[in-house]
Amino acid sequence: MPSVRRDDVEQLRATAVAVVHQVGELVLRMRVAGAGQVETKTSATDVVTVADTAAERLARRLLAQWRPDEPVLGEEEGGAGPRPGGLCWVVDPIDGTVNYLYGLPWYAVSVAVQRDGQSLAAAVGQPAAGRLWSAARGRGADCDGAALRVSGATRLELSLIGTGFSYRSERRARQAAMVAGMLPRIRDLRRAGSAALDLCSVASGWLDGFAEHGLHRWDWAAGALIAAEAGAVIRLPHCGSDFLLAAAPGIVDALADLVVQCGADAV
Image (tube, rainbow, N blue to C red; front, side, top):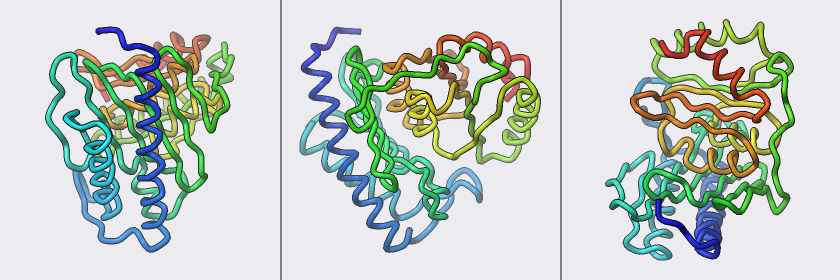
């Protein structure tokens, strides 16, 4: 991957932060007014609201103004792939839409910019809490200006692990079986409903690790960079595998072995 000057990644981070701020304000206003019309995607439980669509369209307008001629990949409206060596913005307008719909505050706006599939800068905002995480490759990660560092966990049996579930019932059943195998061998498990915020939780030391199957690029593009820049070891989906893992260095190998033992390859 061609190198990017430090001032360039900081400029990209500033753009991601600005987009997240404005989109987050819109998302919060629309939640106060009511989430609006609800439609479904992959299943009856996989919802999309009017706010999701409006938020992504605002992000696209801002990026077209500030970063013209750079493609955008978004959860709701898709997008063409980037040119080799070119930049591509990856947007999840509301990660955790079901939480948003119900009024649970654990939802996020996620924006990252990638080159050749690698994230260079990113921001994740939690509008309901007023938090904002950001990172630039090689420059570290922070939350509201405070530098982040992953936990010092070294024992998997004393580690708190995050995960998520698919909206497809057949995959969810297999994921539940995997979790049942994991639970006796970790401190506890959390399923909060937003992969972007779960990855930021690893970066913040609130979780020792996170593992999930079936995520899309917009789910992890921002959060994975933030976790990595805070010191997490990241294993991204690749070569036909849709498995993502992020964990403190002291437990990453043990966690990876555990999820395989519990049937992750079949999920």
